[in-house]
Image (cartoon, rainbow, N blue to C red):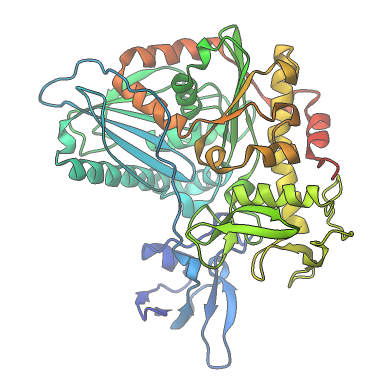
Length: 507
């Protein structure tokens, strides 16, 4: 049997009983399926072209029983903007052997993977490459990956991430005109699930309380068993703070030198999960929030990752709604920063009440409130892109979890919001969102407005620092013993705080 793709005319072989999603993935096509192919997100829609009329179907729920023709949407292979820069200072590296004088550093995120190539003699960055995490088709968030691994596909997930990282190593080395065999050290940071899958360790420990971390010791290993081309390199294994606060957060702490801060500092890294640290040299607490993937565009009706065609900012100017679109052109969806802005507009215009219910009023934008195709109330940003009532609820869940984590960390240190001197936003989302919008909707406490600074890819900067200096690996081990981690769901005040933080401010 075959599956013919339009508009390209490409023909793919298919086995009886395979889903269209499996066929497309097998051909290397990046079809969005943030729910892991469980039929929940509706992002894998394709059009079956049939004699009696075309019809839309979910690729993950449509099995191939005969030759079929499928028209793929524009978004079947979407671009994605990956943050590779950072604002870290130049680092003088430890001595390196003359036959292998190069270093590599990885930031392995749930959504994206970034690889840096460094000159080990000077610390200078020679090249950088990034990609969508090749595990993404197995599910958009950590929970989906864990379920997939425990469902018998752990080896596939491990092979996928190692293969992708090996591809990036080859790419940066080719760009610099060197061989991967000339690398002497490779540092990898990522959340606990990503680290464990890369190392071939089952994430079963992350599937049920108390979520004990599997990687608690800083160590070095030969790199070749994990990245075969790196025959001379050692692999740095960075310890996790807890089952859901990982080496990527440690990288942020190291690059921001949070352990030296004289004033209470809040470090926030929001991705598919939200990892946060609060404190300074007098002590720190950390936590992870189950924010869900809404801020990455998943579970949002018109949501998408930050790439071409995504609305990344929304504002009101002279009484009219304005949007900016990544890459220009017509909007195809909305990414996380645009979602936060749109919610801030709804609050400012009084078009959403404290519970998030959309409501028309005397605002000039009230005419943008009308039912979507499925009958849900929706706020239309363009003719094609809108936020539904359910989208607003998904955002409330995400922002409620993050805001509650911040409040509970402050309580654990006996701090008021006024005592927090600065807020550092790490990662792509933190770099692109408008802090005033985040404070307006309560994603960040309103008291912290004016104290927010974006620090770029701090996890990547930390990975580079670790690759350059051995003392940073030793420091990571010391910090694991000093930083207190909070399991938010176990705190008696969590549910009440979370419910309060879900509410939107008054317009």
